[in-house]
Image (cartoon, rainbow, N blue to C red; front, side, top):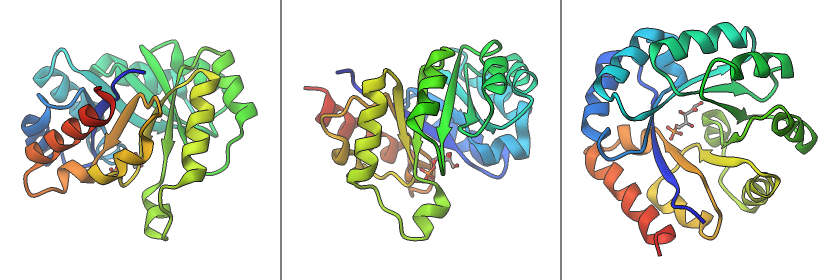
Length: 213
Ligand code: 5RP
């Protein structure tokens, strides 16, 4: 079992605040994500600025793309993104088109999806899935639990690299002990902290404590 990576989701409304947090924690995290909100607000400019600041860091454009996969993927790859996300209800042709343009495509699991669909994603060569508790589900009282862990484990058994996200804090990580999580993705758990650098380091330390032995 590997040591899960840590990814910061920069879900800021503007590039200035995103860059401010990125420079505080970029040296601690493994992956920088241009979050959906930032993609919608600042798009390619945000990706290319972050790529200039962090030339060697893995970078994700969290476009949650549903259509025009090839065009969106080419645009984010040209700006410097390594990975890009598509929403799980996107069609297979959309995923195939996007996959040609980026180093790796990630399928974001929201709402209704099936393991039969997941097998189709594997069949076209998509290796990454992101298991998500949406902000809105969390707001309406959903919590992480056994049902989530079982789905995460099944996706890993099928052969996916599975990232986990949605309202994570340092205390949530131990729920996943013993599971080969690819990446923990956190936004507000770092950006919302009084001291983002300390928060990012606390996530790294807890990952190391649980998976590093
Ligand atoms: C929202 C996202 C977020 O970037 C991701 O879930 C992390 O956010 P947070 O840790 O703040 O819940 O993809 O759609």
